[in-house]
Image 1 (spheres, protein in one colour):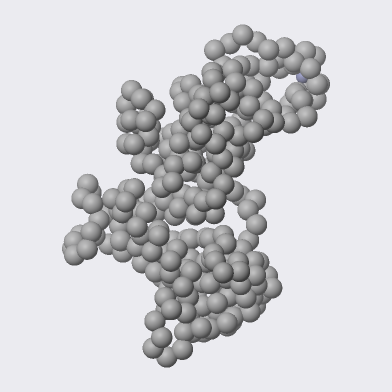
Image 2 (cartoon, rainbow, N blue to C red):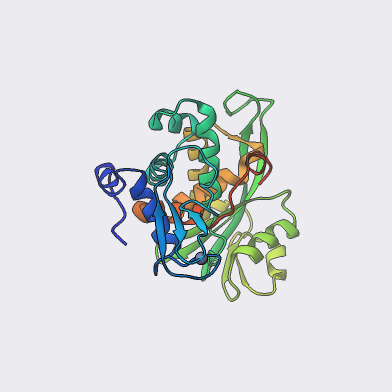
Length: 303
Ligand SMILES: [Zn+2]
């Protein structure tokens, strides 16, 4: 498969039209060539349809390039999807639906929003490997906004959401990150983050909280003793929290409560691929392929 684009001109050359995008989808789905999902036959005709469709030579089953993907059923051109994925994956801070709407020149804001939500859903790799080695774990709170008012200090109607985070320490700096909305600072909530995101045999560096000591599969290295502030002993997870808060305010003018985990997933996707934006694009398109088509109802529900 050809190199993924690293610039907008490269993107234009790689995906000049609908057919180029459809071919990329087909190659991704059948890296070794077409295989009929009904009968297993290896040859197909290409039907001249608005969206590239293959027809099995043996059983005549028709398969659209987008069948079974998150892109299925969308009325937007594939190229709009690809460009949206490229913009969202490579833009340093990511985009709001409003920015995406302007950048893509879409007719209405209403078509930009579900597009962005589908791409965000694709940001969590269901097969991702758990964090491993030395892992800093801590919790914080993020302000969220209600209504159309931006979040800010001293607004009485704003609330706080509790978030737990974990970051690998690789040499002198941070490796991969996980962030999760939690209901409270209980042993169950924090233990759940560690159990679900940190590999057995790892060492968790946390505050002196005794709940970690009860975790079976990881070692606990309590770093906060007495009055030492947490950011001096857990520098990397605190830097991640600070980045996430700045990002939330800068890009979204504060997060909304109902979609917080989706926002956190986007931040994590971006952070973990901050040095490989071209690969992030391929990952985003690839992951959106493997997911079941999302209905509008799923998108607006709590994720
Ligand atoms: Zn067939």
